[in-house]
Amino acid sequence: MDTKTLISEEIAKVVPDLDQETIFNLLETPKNSDMGDLAFPAFSLAKVLRKAPQMIASDIAEQIDASNFDKVEAVGPYINFFLDKAKISANVLEQVISAGSDYAAQAIGQGRNVAIDMSSPNIAKPFSIGHLRSTVIGDSLANIFEKIGYKAVKINHLGDWGKQFGMLIVAYKKWGSKEAVQANPINELLQLYVRINAEAENDPSVDEEAREWFRKLEAGDQEATELWQWFRDESLVEFNRLYDELGVSFDSFNGEAFYNDKMDEVVDILTEKGLLEESQGAQVVNLEKYGIEHPALIKKSDGATLYITRDLAAALYRKRQYDFAKAVYVVGNEQSAHFKQLKAVLKEMDFDWSDDITHVPFGLVTKEGKKLSTRKGNVILLEPTVAEAISRAKAQIESKNPNLADKDAVAHAVGVGAIKFYDLKTDRLNGYDFDLEAMVSFEGETGPYVQYAHARIQSILRKANFTADASTNYSLNDAESWEIIKLIQDFPRIIKRAADNFEPSIVAKFAISLAQSFNKYYAHTRILDESPERDSRLALSYATATVLKEALRLLGVEAPNEM
Ligand code: ARG
Image (cartoon, rainbow, N blue to C red; front, side, top):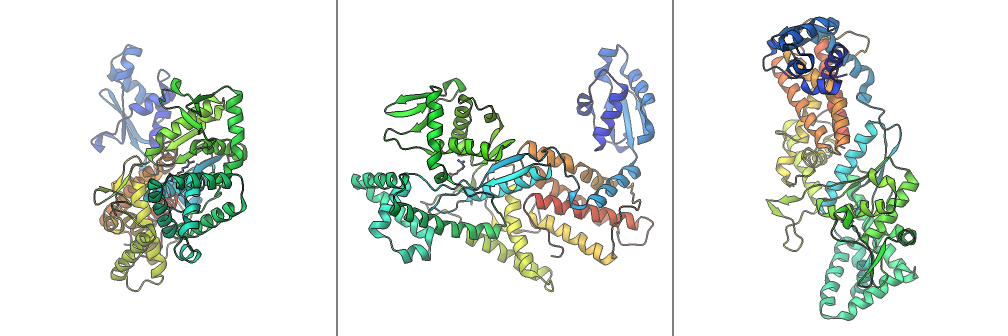
């Protein structure tokens, strides 16, 4: 239990007029540590109790069970709490040492599923930086939810269906070659797609042809299906290469196409409930009562289904298949309107679990301050960018630690970790500028900075030949170590908060603070010097490394033991 909770609990025992949460929120951190570690102001009780705050404060101070504290005293209208640092640090260190990487694990999820829709790139199109954000944020959320007792189901909802596949088939049949596609699948398919779209501008028959091919595809025509399957397979080979580099895996690759035969049910339910309206030949659901201006377009006038129709079918399927406690969609901000519609339509269909659906949006990435645009040539190609991050990491390792044994593996962990960490430390709704140099730097609020702090501790522990022992009573009461103890003690609450807000940046910022506090400690305290506190200092170092490594793991970032 963190100290704030402990104190609010103790106060609540003697102040029945306030609930514990109110007390918790009233607690203040005094500016001066002479006034204790936390203080409770008695003003708010004066009205209820009809007594002077000073009197109330001294009454409460007398009644508090002081065995948990060094000292509890009333000063004017405040009750000041001085924590028993030795006792608390002993307790925290013992917890981390006995739990190891399981420290801060929680049972909140009770094994229930969280379905996480993440990454979800489009077949035959380049994997964008937005897909990277979705991949990295989704993967971290999966780790965070598992840490608090849920089971994460990572779903890659591939964009592998729609009229554009009709276009692609037309283009391929006109100009394509098997060899060219195999040599460079996504690039070649993209060229074909761009070319056919240009052609369609002048020649309306192209559009008709594409529609016809998509109709065939929807009907299971053999030639159309084979081509589509091949485009999909080739694209996935490329995507999987990137996922391997990033160390991200999925539980399902059921994309939009998977729902081709599952949309009738959606339309049937909508029809049965009288929710479908006709609008210019199309079938729509009116959502005005949800304050949503645009109706959801379920079927076009030619009978074709849409993105949202497939998402409706997917939601039904996932509820049945996974019986999720939460369904999370990690998709850019620009699709907010789509997810509002999705939830509202499900609500209209009387699925009360629509309340368990959350769109987790994120902001745009820029490069040199400018918006990314394929058309204007301002693009970030991910595979070469990841490779570049790894080679920059390697160069730094070469200069810092030329004798390091496993340089390539470490460079990989640092380069990939740098990109992920930079993304995840940003409040997800904010965008950021993709600055590889800043990402890979060992200084500043970066992944390599945190990884380096962890590796440095490992090196200290190796030098001391230290093994932490859960039955030894380690304890510390100096101000520098106290900063670290407080952070470590806070880790469970940090994780819970990150899960509640779908916000990995809370964990990333925590990791930065912990690394910074340790570096400060290291600068002040000669950990390895002979002293009665030596073992406790080493235990504190060990606990810090354990928590840093675990925080990084939650972000999908590795923590090498040497750098
Ligand atoms: N393929 C879409 C895109 O690239 C993202 C899909 C997100 N997931 C979903 N269930 N709609 O924009």
